Every structure is written in C-alpha cells, then in structure tokens.
Amino acid sequence: MKLLQCNIQGRKHLDKINNLLELIVPDVVCLQEADEQIISILTAKGYKTKFLPIIKRQAPEGLVDEGVVLAAKAMQNIREHYYYFPADGIALQNYARHRETTAHGYIIVDCFVDDIMYRVATTHFTWTARGDIASLEQRQDMGKLMAKLSVESPHILCGDFNIPRGFNPLYNDLVTQYIDTIPSHYTSSLDKNFHRMGNIASRSHLFTHFMVDYILTQAPYRAENVELIFGVSDHAAAVADIYRQ
Image 1 (cartoon, rainbow, N blue to C red):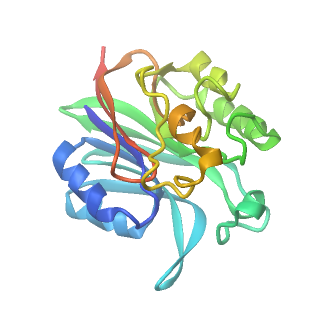
Image 2 (cartoon, one colour):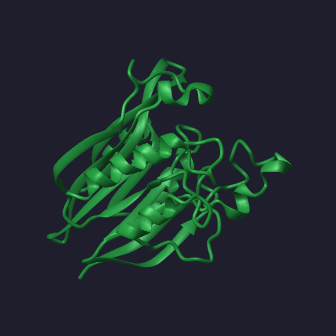
C-alpha cells in the first residue's frame, strides 16, 4: 500500500500537491491543514474522503473549516474522535488564543488495497510555541490520544505532531506504542522555503532539528522505502510503502 502523508498549508500549494498526487499515485492519503478544495481534487481522482474540522480560516468566500483528511479508493469502518474541543467550538485561528479556537482529533479508517485491509489513522496534534518543550496542553492531549488509540486494533498513525524527534519528551510516548518509520538521517520535516519562519535567523533550528511529521506503525504493519519530499508545502510530504505481514 502506497501511503502519502502531508501538512498541505491550506490552499497555498494545491498545484504542487496535485502534481505530487499524480506522481506518487498513493493508495491512501493523510493530510493536515486541508479544506474542501483539496477534497474536491481527491474526489475527482476517485478517492473517498473523510474530513474532520479542527479550525476555521479566512477564505475569499468567508470563513471555511480546515482540518484533517483521510482519503482512499476503498474504505470502511470510518470513525472520528476529538481528544480536545474548545468550550465555545472551533473559531478563526489565533495563535495567541490557540486553545480557545482549535480542536484536535483523529480519523481512523479501514482502507482496502488489493483486498488487504490496512487500518490507518491521522491527526494534527497540539501546537505549542516551543516545540522542544512539552506544554501542559500537549501532555494532557497526548494522554487522551494514546488512551483512545490504545483500544484500537493495530494500525498506522500519520500526521503533523508538533513534537520534534529527540527534543520534545512526548516523542517517547509515541515510540513506546509505535515504530517511527521516518529514517534517522532526516532531522527536520519543515521546509524553509515555504514556512512562515523561514527567513527568521533565530528560528533557523526549525529547519535543521525539527522532525515533526511521522508515519508510525504497529505490528503487523511495516514500512519500506520511506522518504520525505520537500518543495510541496511548508512541511515535507512523507511517502512509504506499507506492508501487512
């Protein structure tokens, strides 16, 4: 099963994402910061999609829902769960009021490729201004996320986790339950050429030490030919061949 994972940064790079889809031809697609426009592109390519809104963004037509998308040509047992939801509902993104405006949840689906079932989940985990330090909100949300996923049968978990490998201690919570399939020679999954912090010298470490996007597996699933593809968004896309043993 060919899997594509990417935070696509809203509508900013749709041409690049469309080209990537045509190049990779993935069986399963996991996206973050996605809205109805990429869903339309996926639908036109024959994918079935599931969307979970987590934030609102300003668009030419007004406020639109943005969130995580899981797409596959054939899928069943489609479920969604929020592990954090603002008291007043999702609202226009505001980094200063992140907790009051942004929800966090995951989609989990049974995808079928060549009559083999692959259970796949995707999430956009809690953001914090200091990615190398686990915030209280991240710790709370990680506990809830792991508790919910622990009752699921084995699966693949993909997403933008905002948890830098080797720095944020919550990374250890992930690899206690999953295998991190991103090769160790990748030290950052952020793309300096597109990221809003790309030209800020004091944040240059983001592009050398912040590996935050993952494809995580549990037995009986294994990943091969895992690579990051830069130049498509402010985050690199992660691509892998997934096998069920």
